[in-house]
Figure (cartoon, rainbow, N blue to C red):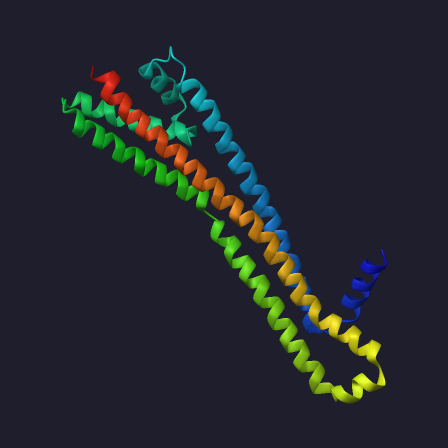
Amino acid sequence: MEFYSYILLLVINSNFLIKLSIFLFLIIFIISIILIFYKYSLFKKYKNEMINFSKDFNDKNVDLKEFYNKLLVKKSDLFGLSVIFFIGFKEFIFLHRKGISDVNIVAKMVEKVMLVSMLNELNFLNSSINIFIVLKFVSLYLGLLSTIFSTIMLLHKIDISIYMKSSLPIFISSFSEILLPLLIGLFITFFINIFFYKCVNFINNISRQYLIFINEFIILIYHKLYN
């Protein structure tokens, strides 16, 4: 409790530059929290969709045409694996109706549209990820610059040798006050970094799952639909 009281006193007694930087840190932290909750709910939604789709698709009794028709009814709401499959099977039907019977051509065309669809999904998941990068660098440099300029302001006002001899506790207090923005900046940078890499890992994992599914679907075209 004494520690928090000490920090609060440091903030209250700090100069305008430090107070401004702490206010900006607060805004950055709030934006980060909002973004984290948004990304968490989005990733959870995509993860659940992938689990549910895989469960339905891997059913031994599934009929691909019936499965496609069910998705067709709600095509505007599709995302993730559902939309990748939908786009791929739609292309397959289109090529079949055009009379293209070469398995290699059909497989390549279907794979191409599915990969494009996958990239669109990954781009959507990646959207706003760059904001994390901006926020963490802003936090780091804001803390660093606030500390540097506050140090310059302190040294400009006093003769540091006299200041240290006359009142060491006051000097320590001023030094703690100066370091406060840097410590807050490092904390927020570390906090954002943790979730940033979790986002990157999730997107890498889901992209691998999408590629596995596309490969399996292409094999299905070869072995099931053209046997």
